[in-house]
Length: 486
Image (cartoon, rainbow, N blue to C red; front, side, top):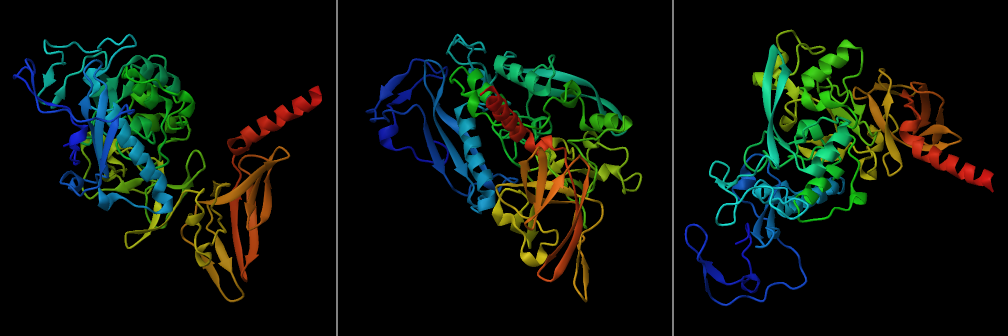
């Protein structure tokens, strides 16, 4: 078997019987033909297994076989839990990312393969026993890696509600990973890339830490816009088995250039420090998710989003209490509140979401999917989703619709998706085929448009022009220079 899949006889080599040390082997049987022209065999199944019923498991994967000379995995498997798979168009991106995610586990990003990583000269990063294998760790049920692969680091002065503690973390310290993580956070002294410390078997240590790398696709759960960044490509190259094509890396916005403190200190420390200086606590937030919904925009403006701060039925463990006070939450109740993504150490942040009815997804909040357009009778803010749409903030006043006889005010507001264009060095926001021009950041655009005998009344806030038009203007300026040279 390879995972849940029975391997065809023709894929199998001879059966070998060895002693307890894995030595003095003898062959039995006849070898199969194998698979010509392949570097790796990936067996895929879709079965409801016991593991599928644990938590919210969507899929799982591992390698099954390694070649003898360099330990590279040559066969692996993945099982996709049928009840967790959605084929809706707006969820297809997450499904495809999950497939890629599981393939990367089988190829090398796995607790069962860390001890087999090699340096750029092909030499093992972890010492070997007499049988040619790294020492086995019974507790991990895997081979024990050396501190040239993963190192334990203690974060002193880790701030939580009510005091300061020490936090022990596991950090991937292979050379290219260290180089990439330091460049990403703009922290030249960062030890390496932190690994997940929650989630139990199959999650802890086998993913990037969610609090630090939020939407990097190799974190332990997909929450929004998963990207395969230079960091993950660097890890795959640091296995010693692959060469990465970094031009295929996707940009990771989360944490970009936020410095050493963002990584080394708790999210509570980060939020407290920013508040004390009168600065935004972005990318974290402190607005409790409740009715009526007060939506915001993600940092890349690709989605309408909510602060995922929720109230739990039980008080959180002291280590994960991240607030001394929360707006509109009674004093003494802060310990019941945390981010809805547990792997992020209960740190709350701005996140995409889906509108549901009786637990069925009606539409998502990603601006670039036309299928997320609200039904006309519910499109109070005249939103338009599609490839050329982005998220823009509303003012703090709710939108309303007026007819000759009725006035309707919608309780859910805060942001919406609209088409835009960049021209004449300006950002132009399109609302129901009307164009509104932004002249400066924070400018309020008053909207009054008659649609189907209803007057829609509201307002949009202009973002900094360069957030959406910088590439266009750079291209325009380059063309202008070329024309002048002619």
